[in-house]
Image (cartoon, rainbow, N blue to C red; front, side, top):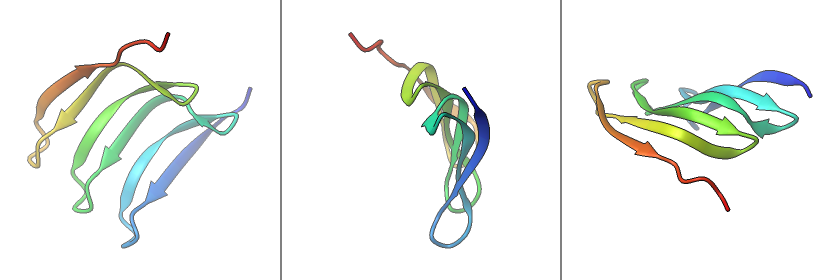
Length: 73
């Protein structure tokens, strides 16, 4: 198992997402951003699957929705 920091960018070069990859899959804490740089969503992945609580943020950066991901059967 190898973990590596990962960043992905919008076409305009602004940061779209950052987190950790484990063996090529999203794993651990991730954040996603709008083109203007404000945080859009954050939460955890476990081997490429969203798990636990994910928070969605408004354009001012305040949390406005928390979604609990259902475990996969």
